[in-house]
Image (cartoon, rainbow, N blue to C red):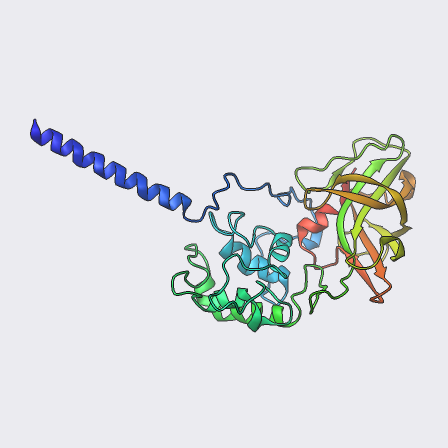
Length: 331
């Protein structure tokens, strides 16, 4: 009887030990905030023709598109770490940029030498490079702390580190190729949202799953296209020649139709690219018959900041597929 009891107690201790270890593993990379925040970039991508090649390795270059595809997403956005549990958020290319550039580190170095995760033009002052190369306090480890079994990080580590460093040194350009070398400098206009409403009723079209293509189920006389832009210094009504382009091809806009956008002081408020509500202050109403007849249709926004003297476009030919999908319409 005593032997059974002793055996029962031993099994209980073993079960308790396993439970504690399991909880530690679960909590180890958790931020304690429960569920992950919704991912607006979890979209159902449409066929982009030659621009979307499945199961193809993206060439390794010092661009954010390449680094996100080859390094940040497969190596760092693994379960329980930089997949929304911890900043920076490497799940999407836009989230990667937004949570790296000019963002103060959650865990600063003991010396306080690094003010930002990524300081454009300054790889040696960027905490991202420091965490990839050194253990900041002798207890935190060198990033990445662990990699999946099929990761090529160990075999290509030196190449990856070089290209990350080059991306920062060249100005840490965003997914469209725009870069900002100094904080507080005048940045190009930023696209916050793209929406389409029925011209007859003003009802906004819905998207296919997340930030997927806009869906047109009827044939109205016209559609009203809305664009949300922001600029850090230039008033929106002073932006030069905001223009909407419509093309039957995802990347070739040589035959695209051109439609000037009008600024309004009475904007519409709808969800934007990041999922939050934004002000849509630029619009153009286009008869359905004047749009290219093909489906899907792809759109591009072009605008010039007079202080910079250059035209900013989005999306561009090397934009990630989910961004091209966001600026599309299925009829």
